[in-house]
Image 1 (tube, helix red, strand yellow):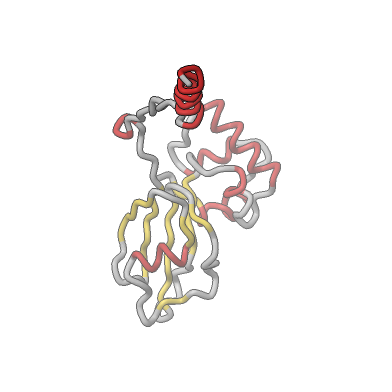
Image 2 (cartoon, rainbow, N blue to C red):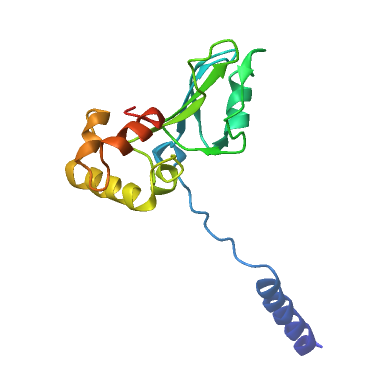
Amino acid sequence: MKQALTITLIMMIFGWFWLYPRKTELDQVDLAALPATYVEIKIEGAVVFPGTYHFFDLISVEKALTYAGGLTTDADLSSINMSLILTSNQTIRIASLESTDEVPIILLNVNRASFSELISIPGLTEIRAASLIIYREQYGDFKQLDDLINVNNIGTVTLEKIKPYLSLG
């Protein structure tokens, strides 16, 4: 009888250790130490609240315009792609239907734009975009847009064609 009780007790202790796992230590992450990255978008023109907006995730043109209070009644969206995903340091200009001199354009920061953003500009081919990025990495940021003339495969005609789509900041 003692032997059966001892075996039962040993089996219970063994079963308890086997069935109930040990507590594991949780790793703690100091979120305050992680740098916050954000997307900075400047919205100008025929919107309710023009200005600079900061987002902590990539955002489409349509959502960005919603955050800017929406469009005014005379906004011209004929050449704006509302589903375009915006990255940092871009400017959206929404033209008014009443003014004919303003063209709605999304300006790209030439010093921060990625390859895929650069090739979306009319007149800027893949070779020219790659040359621009290589030049920018070798010589640093552009001080003015006219400095793009120094980039291989970009001449005066191409420069004049792409200038309306670019900004320095």
